[in-house]
Amino acid sequence: MNDYASRPAAPRRTRPRRTRPSRTLLPGLAVLGLAGALFALRRPLAMSAPRCLAGRWHGCYDTFNGVVLMTLVALPLALLVVWALAHRRRRAGVTPAWRPSLAEVGLVHGTVPFLWLTMMPGAAPGTAPARVSLVPLRDLVSMGPLGIAGNLLVLAALGFFAPMRFTALASVPRVLALGAGCSVLVETAQYVLRLDRVSSVDDVLVNTAGAVLAALASRRWWRTTGNPASDLPRPVPAPAG
Image (cartoon, rainbow, N blue to C red):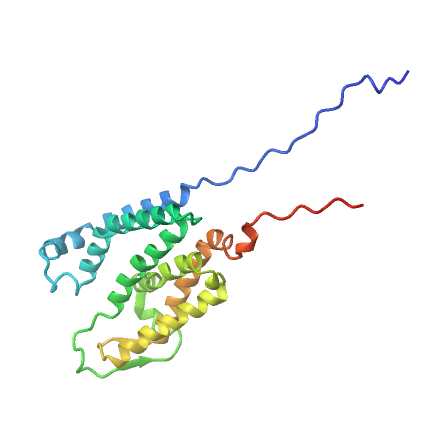
């Protein structure tokens, strides 16, 4: 008689599943960051609120505080547009629906206000001589922490959302090329239009770095959609023989 036949099989050891980070972590951090920015800028934004709400151009759309305030005011409308686009895609049977809709609206809503700020004229537009700084890293000292942070945000939305929406841009070198090209166009426009602003190579470097860092932050979303064929079910190989 075989004694081993009557023994029950040893239970298989199962490895504990790795818990993925919550999907609400990134939106929660974004909300906290937005709330902190609003708290820090509450007084300057409150100063621009009367002129912006009255529809006055001067003192609202030609100032940093006014543009930031109107960008925040238009945020609920942007979210409504995201919902409408996603609802339209779902009715048409297009999947995924929310990710491209959010990318399209975020790309516009997060980039246009910063481009508007960079194209604001200085004290003497049209009369002051055009100024160019082609020495790398020379203007970083004069920018200061606040200036560097602002330049990092100029093309951050472009770098964050563009790879999520366009498969051809789902690559860090391509985002780098896109950010550098857009930044060069902005600096060239400042020089040609004689806006009394310095067209600096450091602005190009910092703006491009902001786009690349933002692209790396959203990489977990655009890498999964970079190859549409990877989302299709793989065929099961036929048994041998």
